Image (tube, rainbow, N blue to C red; front, side, top):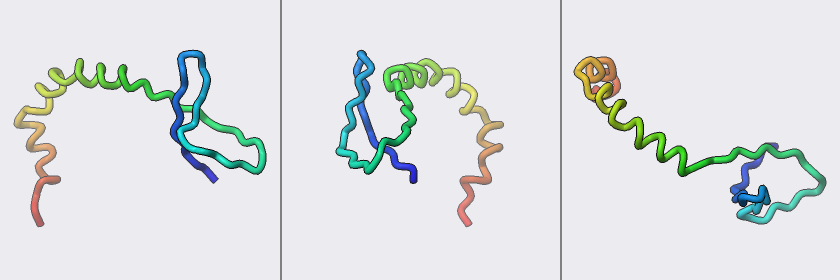
Length: 70
């Protein structure tokens, strides 16, 4: 069974789980590092370019079928 647990990884690589985990045996795990600062920065840097592209009449027409009320 897969289970996700939030953790914080310090600059030294130490993993601190944010909730208790009780296991009956040793288990393998996958760690995904979420660099929130970098993600936010990328979104801010691309906002203007994407806004120019998304705010065109062609884009409105292309997505208009999703805005129709039945």
